[in-house]
Image (tube, rainbow, N blue to C red; front, side, top):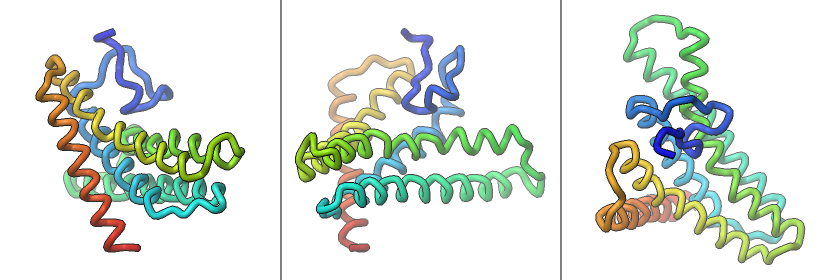
Length: 179
């Protein structure tokens, strides 16, 4: 399994026959963390009386963050590369690197949809979606270890907890300052 790419970072539509290298993985991991933090910040203040609205808020957060990220990356790369117009390949590269932002909304939306269908209680769905996001954020440390060809260890678990706590603090600050 060592030669299989991490589809969580770049999605099955963009699978490759070789694993991602650091240069290609780094912007996707960044987008993945960024997307998950903003989805969590959208989930926490929800009052799910109408679960469909919660789904729309999470989807809207993912879509607007995706577009903003693609735009910001394109501008940043233009500064880095000079006044060169991006090629179709570079545009696809920007889009591919930003896909993890969209994937951040997938599982939470599925969980919220289960509440909308009446399969679980809305508050349970919201809590489950929040926990999933926290696990996704903490799980990136294991992905980074794998990219570095390192074995997971106690230090990985501790780093995962620290990354999760820092992300949670960021979300709390965002929620407190904006809601």
